[in-house]
Image 1 (cartoon, one colour):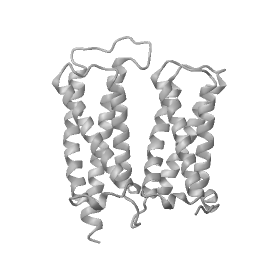
Image 2 (tube, one colour; image 1 turned 90 degrees about the vertical axis):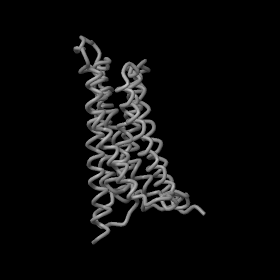
Image 3 (cartoon, one colour; image 1 turned 90 degrees about the horizontal axis):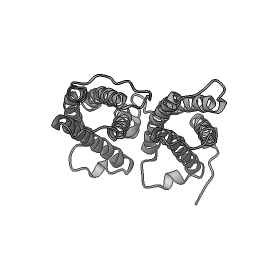
Length: 283
């Protein structure tokens, strides 16, 4: 039986989510009113605002009608993971859209960029509100390692998008890097799905120990990509004169930078996993 819970709308996190819905709708509407552009990055920005608007509105409705308590998933893990994902997606969309050529009189473009950055701040605030505090019993995705898993998966998605602009089949070393990105992404995505679907209890091995081992392996593999990818990608080549920000050379730089970001994320993830397993359990 559906019961309406008005406290979900007046609570701080509820107010933040309502503002997120408003600002994503404004950003989407302003950009859509300017007409279509034949650019995949423009499409990505539009999809981001539309996707975040729909999912945030769905979360508000599910919690307002108390239907979230009847779902066979970990609702807290789902909302925490989505808040982290939305923070990253909106930040990427805000940055990409602000790079597109604009002018001082293009009010709607400037307005869309401003509201998008405000939306990013709101989602970041929600992550801080829903993140598990020290000593608090909460879902895995509400902890720092859980949020880092979302970050790792998102960064890998950015790398995959950029790979479509480059020919990485020229050298076996580049193919190894793509294999590392794929393996680590699959593992991070598997952890997120198992957590949200409440399937960690049926995992055939101690999940926390397996998590540490996989994180250590991911760190070692990403160290090789940080070295190998720039070595082969920029071999015997200099930066060409490119009028567009999204030229192949810049895309290669983005992939190299994102690999470094994921390496740092996995190192921090490993540190926190060690801390949760070997220190928190002892106290």
